Amino acid sequence: MIIDNLINLALEEDSVFDDITTKEFIHKDERAEALLIANKSGILCGIDIFIKVFETIDGRCIISPRKWDCSRVKQGDEILMIAGPAHAILSGERTALNFLQYMSGIATLTSKFVECVRNSKSKIYDTRKTVPGYRELAKYAVRCGGGSNHRKSLIDMVLIKDNHLKFVKDLAARIDKFRERFKNVPVEIECENIEQIRRALDARVDIILLDNTNFEDTKEMVSLIRECSTERYKPEIEVSGGINIETLKEFANLDIERISIGMITHSSPVLDLTLEIRMK
Image (cartoon, rainbow, N blue to C red; front, side, top):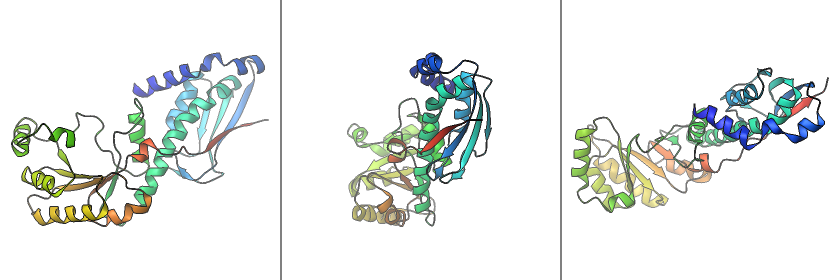
């Protein structure tokens, strides 16, 4: 339902059914074929949505995919062929490409981060830093790139941040009370210094988030957490904030389970793709 709504909104935004250029310059009975080609290497994501855009515009469009989601493509690869009314293909081209390029861009950037930590225990996670309304698409794209999803919404898990802590006096007691009501909901807490780490360990949280800490401070905090861990209680460690491709490996070597990267959903460049009309 969300995807249907997004497609309809995009078609309305582009005024696809009132495309003045196509209506005035292309005969209504003209038919066409077009080939989707990759201009850059990357990971595909959003093929089904691309197809659905054209099916929504005109059910007579016939689309023959040669590549599917999660496929790796290189420059020059042919991804799919579309045949049908020229009006539908010309008017829907940009709308369909916007979805496919956006999602493929996220999948491609995610795959680069995932590749960097392949030989470590760390996994790459996304965040909620997504375009409003597009989170389902963005998080699916992260999975296509080999990444993992953090919470989708505020109901999925507890994440106690610095602003929350200003209101919480007895952290351990509040977490104990919460767990009496919610048995299987993970509890994560953001820590910025050693004192906060000790509070988190006393409260026996499930995940400790080290956010925006430099490498040396992160290393010290990870050591403390591991020293205090036991067979019965070993919290996962998540690191986030300011980590990029260049610094990723050194953080991944710190014996941490999770690295969350906001930029894979909020700053990934689109994957360069082209839809070319083929004249008979």
